[in-house]
Amino acid sequence: MQTAVKMGHNVTGAQMSPKDSEAQLKATREVPPDVPGGPEKLALVRTREAAKADSIGSVPVPGSAKGMLKTAVNKLVGVSPEVLIDKLGERLAFERGGVRLYDALLAKAKAIDTLDKAMLQTLQHFRQEEAEHLGLVTAAMEKLGADPTAMTPCADVAGCINMGVMETIADPRTSLAQCLNALLTAELSDNAGWELLIDLANASGQGDIADSFGKALQQEQVHMQTVKEWLSQEVLGQV
Amino acid sequence: MDTLTSLFDGKGTPLAKQKFTWREMATRPISKLDDDAFTRVRIILMNGIEMDALRLKNIGARFHGPLREALAQVRRAEQHQATMVNWLLSADHSPLETTVAYEQVAIEVTAAVAQTEPDPYQAQTYRFGLLEDFDHLYRYSAMLDRLEGKDANNILQGYTDIIPSRPTTDHHRAPEDDLRDSYQRDSAALITKIHAAMITAAEYQTHDYYMTIGPTFSDPLARQLYAEIASVEEQHVTQYGSLQDPDESFLEKWLIHEAMEIYAYHSCMEQEENPRIKAIWERFVDYELGHLNLVSELFKKHEGRDPAEVLQGSVPRLIEFKSQREFVRKTLAAEIDLRAKGHQFVDRKDEGKASKDYRKQLHADGVASETVSAGYQWTPGTELSLKKAS
Image 1 (cartoon, rainbow over the protein chains, first blue to last red):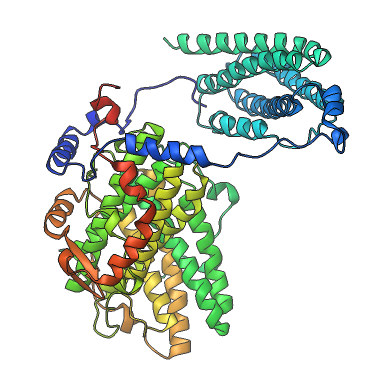
Image 2 (image 1 turned 90 degrees about the vertical axis):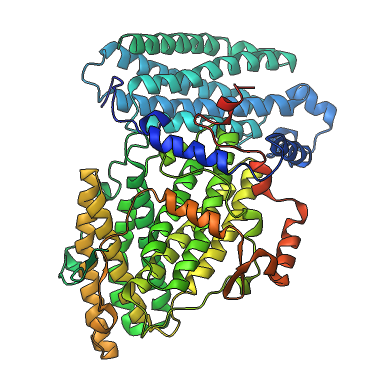
């Protein structure tokens, strides 16, 4: 696989075809826009549609809370349980996806003959920790009586956000540096996600759950820092 | 113009030897960045043609029991040909970028066809549709810029202009104004039949693609834009489909389709610069010759006719895969105000009430193609470059 970026016959830019580009610009001068206004028209419709849109979906009611009075539910799962359950669902989805990102990167990294074996071991170690975090979040959700098999709204959105990261790492043509860049995007977001989740668990009166996540956050900080350093080495090493 | 007279004479590859593996079908894709835009144009065109080959044969099988086995056998090869061709598109094309490429196909290929089509009415029809796809490119380019922050010219590579044409707003016509006169099977030139089959196939694919990816967009304007232009593409399928003589038998249409596939693959092969892709076109010319020979035998057996009755005559040497900028601009200047009324092309002031009423009703809640492109002037590097990232 390609590990270093190369000069080549990239034909996407205007400089590659100056005569054609000039002809294109001449055409735009001769045939101006036919609809008055500008991008603000598009923005207006977006605003209007956002104002009346449905939500993506709902947070499932915890099985243990079905049929209980609201006060009793709050005692069991804290204040505004739906917010915590939604974000727990997000973390769960993110960690599951994270394991798969490491799986894909591990497979690709093995195609690089010159790759440092220590890096492969570390990738494998991080993959294992992502899988353990998944178990942590599952336990927290079960403690709250929430269903860890359900896809909460934030879990769904996390899947949308990560589609580009997954597409990048899964593409056999992308280089190690390009994949590390994608992985860093995920790890940066993951770090902020764990920080917020711990704050949220505390604010929701779930101090035990917050405490159980402390180690995961520390590990994620190491993931982020390590991936950032790998990326830096990989890119600067080409200069 | 150079012509070919023996394009359909070869025996090609027998159907039994048209073999694939999964890995071969899902082969290495082209590079969005480094391959020439016309390589992608050819890929999209040929996938559209193969998908139409499947479509024609599946519908034919509904009506013709004795042909079902042969149709199933040819379809299986074509399914795998379509896969091998379409899978050449790389995953880093966003659906909107692929859309821009689809419109480039519609513009450049239809413009090439319009210039070699000997029947003046059919040529006029191609020019009419061409100006509408040319406008779709402009609207989608605005959408790409304003949704993804990308320059459509990264896909077009300078070959195709990005300017307003006959406004998409005006493309929406009553169904009766989308029908056209057909060629006459006994008197039409072979290339006329080939052109009609080819452009119908390409437009059908575009319609189906927009119908598939339209709902995958989250942006409400993109969803509306795809809904709007997919509807026009259905009109285009109606228009181009009606160019074909309805009195042709199914086997005659099948024969023409196979001849068209050979002609199209041959044109791709002759002009392809990427050697790996060229080898695919070359291989599939031989596959299609195999299909043509098979259907020729069926034609003789079931209709008692000589296939040469249908396939006689020369065809232009190639579909020219090159920028048709000058032809498109000339057509735009002369024919932007044409509208369709019944089977005829008329000045916009003479457009019929049916289409005006139809359009007025559809536009009652706004027109996405206008909203997304308000004030849009294509600039290298996106309109944000023009406005200094304001």
